[in-house]
Length: 78
Image (cartoon, rainbow, N blue to C red):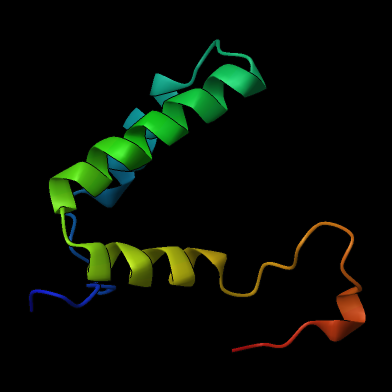
């Protein structure tokens, strides 16, 4: 459905994609690895092109992750 983030399994070969993702970062420094990840996110965001879906994806990706220095006792599970 357009405008809604699809969180159902949707890759034909998810393990193959994961292996390719790991391989794309092999031999890189942590900073270079972060750069590859950021570029991949921006390329895929451009491909998706739907701001509503991207906002849903950002919220879902951030869900349950506390800001640095936050008290773990304040964690709320959603």
